[in-house]
Image 1 (cartoon, rainbow, N blue to C red):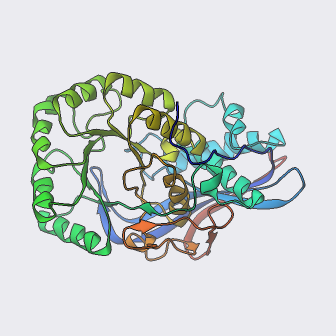
Image 2 (image 1 turned 120 degrees about the vertical axis):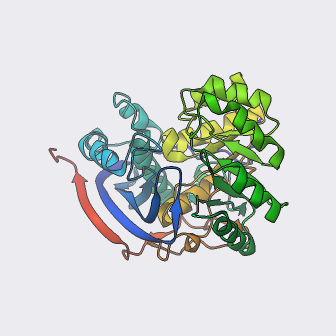
Image 3 (image 1 turned 90 degrees about the vertical axis):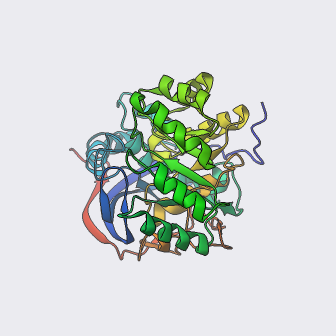
Length: 389
């Protein structure tokens, strides 16, 4: 079945990997952010570097951000668990293999149960390395193109509804084309209604981060008349049938996020009628290759997709822009300019609007960006062949 691709992803090459570097890097937010669990003023990311060479001996470095958070609320993985799994298992296994590629590294790690965000970080760094060694933009390696993509933003839970409206107003003025509003029990219908009243033409997704349970079915129906683009992940992952029941009762599309950890789960959700939109996050699904497979399935099933973010710093943000150029990323993705979120995102160049509301990947090898070394490094380690850990 035609998936709408304008070009095919590049075939993967077998590369030698000689060194893996892990760094915990902290950046300060320009504005505090609160989701259903906590309020943040800084954000720490695990950055993975892989150094290797192509079959002709040409060497380079690929980089990626692990999408895991500091806390185990969104997912069981954290930056600490990802660090441990990469340092003790994934990294040594990759180095001992002698050669690998973005596709076959997952087969190499098949005995490591779970830990998709840790695996996805190393796999994504291998994609960046491969694209750099080939002299191609990462977006083209994945089957996309150097083209503009529409940008959405996320508004957290604020102390008052008035402050939420002010926050969204700043984003609308800057040109953002869609907003995701974080909601939870006690902070849902009122803030959503106020935003719809203040910005009647703004596409809005209410993002619950699985904050509700079966007892909230009737309550969530009250969101149906508010003109939402979608209601995102209302229930926990294990309540897929409850999600499908709610979708049958809602005219508003349900968008899945935490529910989707693989292509298999995406298919299951679609078969049950629980997904009319999908938020694709590379770490949650185990990397870029699985992200592309999910994208292709959703395209064939008529399910629109977009790239979701987790307050990415510069490296992760440019990676997401590359993925967002795939043709079925028809909804605005969370790939906005980094200065909306960070005073310093740690990369050069920084992601900025190409035109208001749109960004464009760099026409350079890989993500096309380099680290500045200006962020606070909390910890670093290098893994090389022959290390015993």
